[in-house]
Length: 389
Image 1 (cartoon, rainbow, N blue to C red):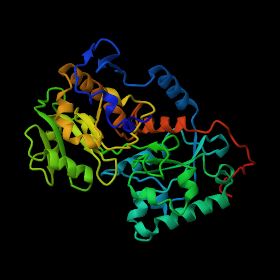
Image 2: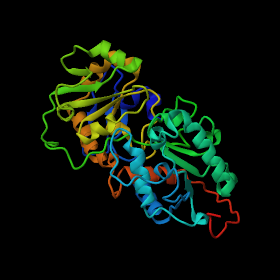
Image 3: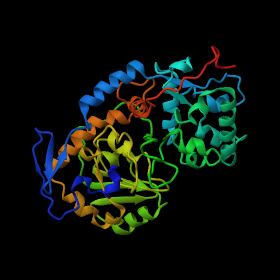
């Protein structure tokens, strides 16, 4: 069962008897009589062994495009350091294309990458939001006619990456992509019909930052909880209604008068609250600044949930329980909070992009998720020595 399916109860924080008996020297703690695993990974030994094998053997074939292609800006990686709210898509593509995972021999490929960029298509005046569906449909049609790889599996060993939520509707005229291919997307809600959790991959939405924040270890976290954002969903309206004038839960809507970084560094818990979509960059923001994330976004298939034990470094709260938020957070003992924060500092490296990538960062974690989804059966077809013909 995916973690947010349990409506936040995974942390054992919904009973009135909130007196966890912890032992930080061991691998877990008891909360309301339930043992909670305190390890960062679901199974560290299996992950590390598989990770080595992935690095040795995993191969990706990328459909080739020349620099003089009319849509080179869409199909080739960016030649600059990505930035902004949807940078994860560009970072992943840039890192992949320069990595040792790439093979020019499609016969050796485990998976095939569809290199179109939803973000770049969205801003291309020749395409725009209204033309993305036609572009994707035509692109799939072209590669299926030019190469044998798509047709042999119906696209099941293909994948694309997108961080903007428009990527979901981009496949409306290409249902084989939506239902067969692996979708590496930030908008990973298993409540929506277009996302299939065991097939698709949750791409973490990360606002790129360099280095480490100052005073991370010594920061004084005097606020219980913090949120800042626009009111663009019923969930955020409920948060505002319950806590807008509270002295311990600071829910800001509109422009902040203080630096965002200072608010995160000064808070024990940082709230990730569903807006238009289940995903925002706030989880990665929280981890970067050493703040324990509180996830209020039902049906969110959390990034790296196949690998990381989210129970040990985050708190999940069902949207219906927003009025109980203070009771839930204050029911967490000092020792349990220290355990959460310790694990936050351990997992934050998995939610960072680097150029070039470094071991266990966001790029390698996404690659591992893809490696888990590679097909176990290779379909052998005659392949031209020059796949461009």
